[in-house]
Image (cartoon, rainbow, N blue to C red; front, side, top):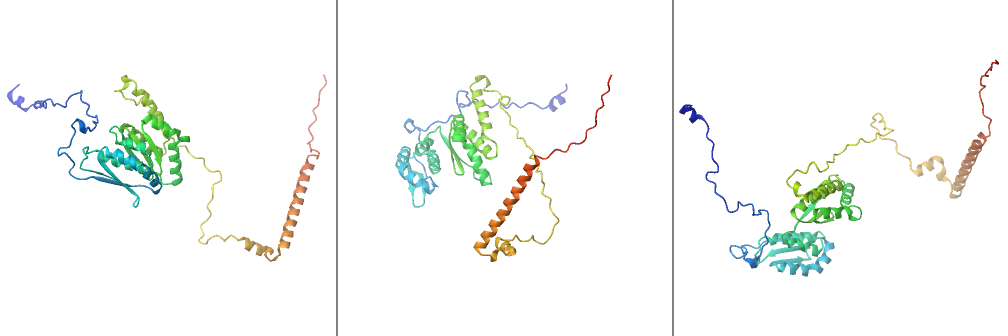
Length: 332
């Protein structure tokens, strides 16, 4: 091979030539682990405190005012541990949380924002305070605009709850989340993975997919997760696939035949007074009207009795039999 041919061949690039091992390129390190903030172990902000004050506010309905006034001291004591201040404004109907100079954890203000949102959506105080933990998250799913028809929306929301809350309880056990259906929203508390699965089930239910199908899938996935051999395999062959069947509706027997188009409106239906004027009953006295009605009833009863008598007499009539042809028997 000549030198010119060697120059024309493309040379492979060595991308790992300048690559060096990084200290974080280690399989023993879990990059998805959420580490908790511990100020006593040395976790601190670069400047020692936050530069600006952050605050979040949310409104709450009128019926929650009495409950919030009772539990607000508990909320205040829970937020004081993280140096977060809170305010309950009963005039405007709002709750506000904001940081202070002593706040060391920069993410705790977002947890406090989720806390007041959950309290506004009728979640009990003891349950809502769990969102302040590092392993707990929350999401409020809006379902009010997913279905236009009000009656259909109420039916599908009740389908999500199930009889005596059985469907909702099964969903809570499978996703390991706390779920509360309230008005036009669904509040979910738990892990990130569980919230994602619960959200899919809720949205599918509003899109006319029964939650029982998704619950069945979650039950199978929970059993498959216990097997370490199937941890890295594809589970699609084990999961059931439910196809939507378009069942044709029965056609009506009596189809409405449209008449020819006329620009004139239909005749007006006569009122009760108009009918009495036509029959002359309007000018009769009350006594005469009662006598007339009684006479009509008597005539109807006589007519019915005659019809019944004729029906009874039909049973005693002799049947008219046709003359059957005679069969001739031949003697041997």
